[in-house]
Amino acid sequence: MANSSNTYYDLYRHGSLGVALTDALDELIGDERIDPQLAMKVLTQFDRVIAETLNEKVKARLSFKGSLDTYRFCDEVWTFLIRNVTFKLDSGGQTIQADKVKIVSCSSKKTEEK
Amino acid sequence: MSNTQVGPVYDTIIAEVINAVRVDFEENGVDDGALEDLKKTWQHKLSQMDLAQFPWDPKPDPPATLSAASGPPTATPVTAASSNYAQTAGQGLSLPGAPNGVPMKQEPGFAPGEPTIKQEPGVQPSLQGYNPALGTAAQRAALALESQYGQRAAASISAIHSGMSQVNPAAPQQPQQGQRPGQQQQVPQHVNPQQQYRQGVAASIQQRMQQVPRPGQNGLPTSQVDGTPDAAEDDTKTIIMDRTEIDAYLHAQLAARGKEMEGGGLMVPLKKVKKSAKARRSAEKRGDAEGVANVDGGLDDDVKSEEDDEDAINSDLDDPDDGADDDEDDDESMGHMMLCMYDKVQRVKNKWKCTLKDGVLTVNGKEYVFMKATGEYEW
Image 1: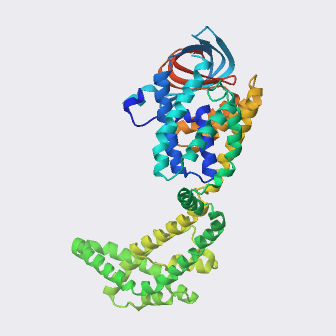
Image 2: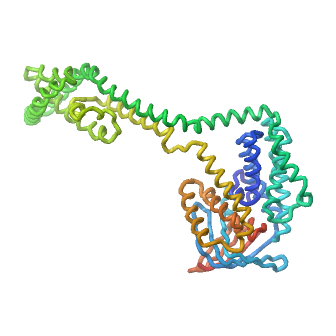
Image 3: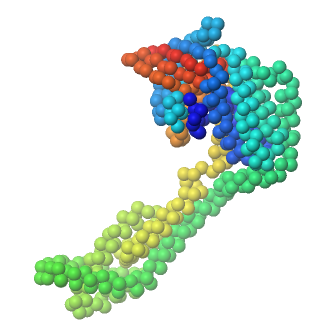
């Protein structure tokens, strides 16, 4: 998907991996060991690497059902708030229940075009 | 998709990112230690979240010692980098420094107001030199009237006369107030009929001129109105500016406004921004700490306040991604969030179907990654 493009979503920065990285970078900046520009470069690299890795390394599938509470489509970003969700993992038929899940989703086509 | 896949995948991502930025670190003159610390802190923080079993987890002790060590070694003499940072911080801090400077700047913001008052009195001398210019303009106007309309201009000329008669009574009053004798004295000095025409035209032009700037003067926060009401009235009546002067005046006003804005206006001092960011982050951390405990069900109040926050935050930020992020941050503390790409989102009446891919899902304190996900839900 995004292999040919130079721009990647910074969406994943807000996942746990991204948050951990941001916090770690903040600590280094706070200790004046790196400057903020360098931290931005790291985050940019992170955007690229996580997009590529998820695309290439991950093969898992899942399906989920639930009731949609809120939906929003703004600037090519879908945001869903789903309640009473049941996730089905295809590996081992494991199911996960959650009373509320927020989905934030960027267009996959946009990355291809970019 | 499974939770067990997360560890290796994340490990790969971390390793790749670290390798990718190694060059950047070197170019910035930052030592390898910082990079290593970054990696370890990153891993350590992930481990703290307890989202999955990570490959680096089997050795839980090193992270602890490292996190302890990451405090002191911060004083490592990375002079180049730290000076770099100090510079950038200095640049950034010039604004935060503004809290001191803000009141300072505002006062100048007003002080320029006084200069602008003075400019107006300063207009007097230029007006003296300027009225003749109006006279030539009036000449030109009169000539144009004559040449274009000949006798038909008589009507407008008579109108000009009436305009004169309106102006002239006002003129003697103003010298009484003794504010702008120079320019007012010129008015009655014109005696012969031709000059009266010119004067009349000039007067009508003056009237128009006065009408033009008036709304501007009222609209703008002029400090010229600080005098007695009489003086203010006098100002509006007697200040006659040509276009360039009006432009200059407006420009000065706008510039003064701009200056006021710079410190205390729309721009938010960096410190505040940082503070709010920190507050959010600490809130997030707290949330993370509590998140696991809270997972079994958020209070309705929490949900509501979250949604309020979302709206508030979204309005501030241009980038929809960023706006969404903050929501996610809140939601992440609840431990229920999916970040992904969408291939298709379809809706038939209230039934939605979507095809998602390349996602990260955090649910019930566990993290999952998936290549493809299909969702069906009803609204």
